[in-house]
Image (cartoon, rainbow, N blue to C red; front, side):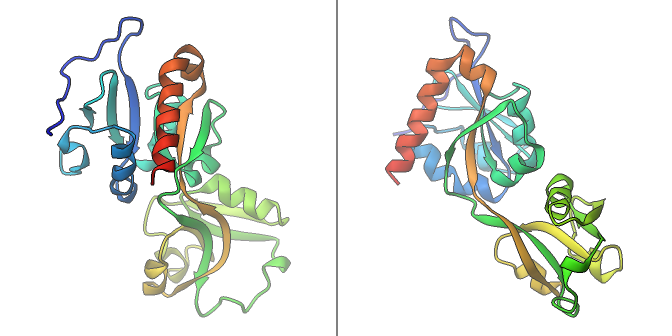
Length: 231
């Protein structure tokens, strides 16, 4: 049966539909079966990352989805632009928004936030003897907290990509980055030396929205919980 998509989405007691923020990339494809089990069938183009559209209706009255960068999902939900989202635990660790409640671990997008350095230098020096270290990362808060807990000052070089180049070009000594298979590290002569945190994706909600629209958002939490149980 072909799902029918709504053309308007105003609910009687609210200004508009609930918005579910989804991350672009690998997690978008991994969450598709979960969305289906929860009864969410977005318009087909939502998974087409070549599409210029970013907001899509679904077969559920009162629910739209938006497709944004993975780091932006938490920001959209924290500031109430979206009421629900699917977000990696790495993003929650980095931003630590008090406005976000993360009721469910969805068990998808498994990876880790790790420290890596060149294969040639790994293990040749005890990090416990360092007083400071220069780190390339897109996770400045995670990196600083990690090294501060060891009494080390982290001088962070904030990069949004190509972290793996930094040690080889003399920009930094180590990197802190998200690692899935480790193949990119290996291809660039790096090895993991420490895992800071294991990461999976979480269902997140805006706390204020949960208070003001408890039946709707609580209902979606329950549907995602049931979808996880049915996996």
